[in-house]
Image (cartoon, rainbow, N blue to C red):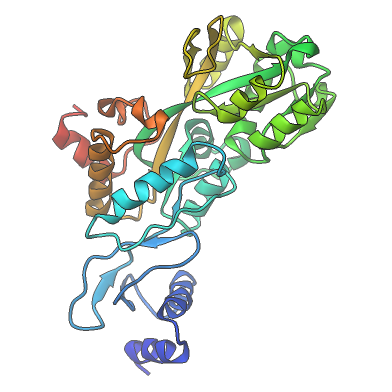
Length: 363
């Protein structure tokens, strides 16, 4: 039986073309039927779930020779942060490309899961925090002895490490978290990775806390309102709407990461940069005093297996979008698009590098 006959039989067995494509894609992933250059059902190809598939165009009727080019996009850690609306905003931007037929926006388990899914060829595009990307490249932390070839497409806004404590808790420094009840983010999330590193900078660990909860932003705020937590870590863009909500209902303190603590953190982990939450900005907490802390750049990463022309096109569209009046997400409005290729902890994908060089952003 020929390869085309096998595929034709698959299509006949299922009333839904999409279901056929899912089965075929699984066969491809598991090493069945096809070699490096493949034949694929492609009158309109998209994999449901967390995925999108790139389309180069249809030729020779229903069948055409293709290179493997599906991309699965994991844009988001959770729907309450900035990643999810950013993915929603970029979805139509990417879908304007002739190379992309469909982009599906989905909430995911966090940066660690996104990197692992790209490594496992389950996804080819994702947003991550640079600290988790650094761990993956170096093969440390949750990637101990199992490094990942992470390639960057572009930088985004910084995620700012914000430690918020109930004023009644008496917490004013990172050291004061000892013996307290602290929310550290979901297991495996970038928030948790930051929490561990910040605690480490002052010689603390989870064992030094009276209670550790792996709660997301909304749940951490609710637990603080209920008095079940003294403090919580938020690693996000500024402002974080959950913190704003908490401020409206109870007195809180922003715990600074500065001085020797910040120096120790940045010396060991070069992806951390100083960040100041300015005072008197009504759009950003309207603080009476500025807060010194650190930030971590967010990144868009892509699979090294994606072709140069596809990543070049996606990079160009992202760059053009940032320079347009269509940008509606606050944290993206703060971006200087000439800076999106700078300070990245991961090497650029060749397609992205080519675009930035042509644009004069990279020397």
